[in-house]
Image (cartoon, rainbow, N blue to C red; front, side):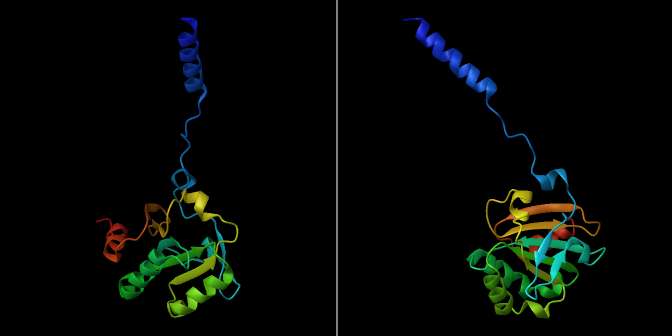
Length: 166
C-alpha cells in the first residue's frame, strides 16, 4: 500500500521533469527590426518593407475591419493626423479583401499619403508578434528598430510619446 503514493509521486516528478517550457521568445523580440512582409493593397499592388519611406518612424497596426476597438484606434489616429504626418503607418488585416476595401473607403485612407494598408494573405504578422488581441501596434524608430508594442487601443498621445522616447 505504501508503494502506491511513492509511485504516484515518482510519476508526477518525471512528468514535471519532461514537461516542456515555453522559453522561445517571439520572433519580433529575436529580430527587433521591421520584418519583411508583403501585403496586398486595395489597388492590388504590393506593400512591402522595401517600399516604405526610408529613415521614417513606422507604426504597424494589425486590425480587423469589423473590430470596434480597431475602428476607434483608426479614428483617433486620423483626428491627430497632423501629429502623425511624419510617421509611416502600415495597416494590415487578415480579413477578406472586400472588408479591407470597405474599411479603406469608409475612413478615406487614400487621402493620407503616409498610410499604407493591405491584406496579410500569408498571415505573417499574428505569429510574428505573438498577437493575442486587436488592434496590435508595433512602433519602430527611424532606423527600423523596434521601440515597443501595444495590444489594444492606445491614445494617440501615448503612441507619440513612445515614438519620441518620453
